[in-house]
Length: 467
Image (tube, rainbow, N blue to C red; front, top):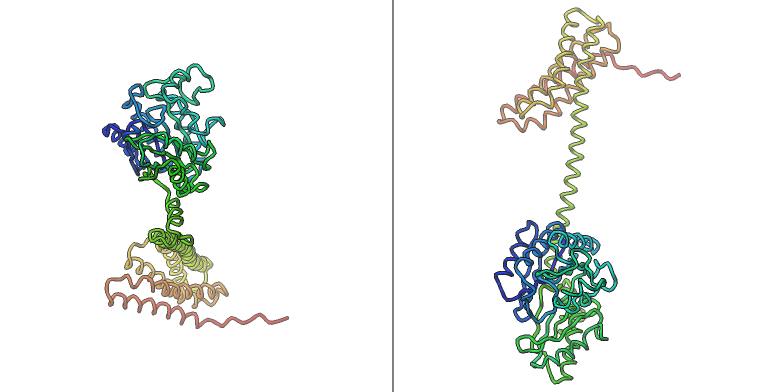
C-alpha cells in the first residue's frame, strides 16, 4: 500500500478541485482519503492510497487534469509553488518500502516529463542530486523566477521533461516517509511575529530537527505553517510548545491550529502522553487500537486455521488418491490371478472358463470404481467386486492341482471381499432410505463371509523348518 499526497495550486475553485479528485478516483484501486482546500493559500492537498500501479496511474491523471485546468500565469496565493501540481510525494504504508516509492516516483516523473511536456524535479529520497533533496531549494523564486532560470541556469535544468515552463509550470516528484503538515494561528495580525516564530522553529535556521516553517498572513491572521518531516525525531507537541514560547516572547499566543491532510495516529498518541501526562500510556489502552489488535489476531488465527485445514485436505486427498490406486491395483491383481490360473489349465474346463470370465470382469470393474457417480451407483459397482471376489475364492479353493498359486489367489479374493465391505461403510449412508442401506450391508457381509469360509478350507500354511 502506497500513499500519495499531491499539492495543487488551486484552493478557491471547487469545480477544479473536484475534477482533479475525480481523475484520481476514476482509477480502479485508487482511493481518495482526504481533500483539504485553503482559499488563502490558494492550494489544495488531496490524499489517496492504493497499490503501486493504481497509485502511479492516478497520480499521472491528476497531474494531467491539473495542467489542463490551472494556469500558473494567473495563479496567486500565499503558499510558495512552482506549478499547477506543485509537489507529488509518494509515501510507503503497510507492506511497501521507501525503495518502491523511489522507483514509482522516478517512473511517474519520467512519464509526466515525456507525455505531458512538464518539467519534473526529483526530491527527497528520489532526488538525483544532494542539493535537490530539500523541497525549499527547488521552490526557490517560485514559478515566476523559474520561468527564466530553467532556460538559463544549467543547475536548474529538470530531471525529466523540457527545460522551459508552460502554463502548468513544473512538478516536483519524490518519495519520503510520512510527515505532518500543521498550521498554527496566532492572536495577531502582524506577519512579522509569525516570521520570527517560524525562524526560531525552523531546523535550517537552528530550530527543531526535521521541521520546516514559514510565517504567513492568512485571512488577516499571523500563521506559522510547518512541515514536520520527521515527527519521531521532533514530536508534534515539542513544536507546538516552542511556537507558544516564541510567540509569547513577542506578546502573542496560539489561538488555534489545523492539519493539512492526514496525520499518523502515533503522533496523536505522543501528544496525548505529553499534554495529559499519560507517560505510561500503552497503545493497547486505546480502545480502537485494542479492537484492531484483537481483530488482527483473530484474522491471523483464522488464516492459520484455514491454512492448516487446507494442508490437511491436501494430505487427505493425496491419501485418498493413494488408497484408490491401491484398491484398483488389488482388483486388477485378483483379475490377473484368475486369468493366469485359467490359462495354466488348472482344474476342470468349466472352472477355467469361469475363472477367465471372472478375470476379465474384475479387470473391467477396476476401471469403473472411481467413475461411479452417486452413492447407489458406487455401491453397486463395489458390490459386484465383492461378489466376484467371493466367486474367485470358491473356484480357486477347489483347484487341487495348481499348488500355491490357487491358494494365494483365494486369499487375495478374501482380502478383496473384506476390503469391499469396509469401503462400503462410507457409501451406504449416501443411499436414500434405510431399507436399501440394510440390503446392501447384508449382501456385502454375505460375500465377505463366503470368501472367508472358502479360504478356511485350504490347507494351513506350514512354517519353514529351521535348519
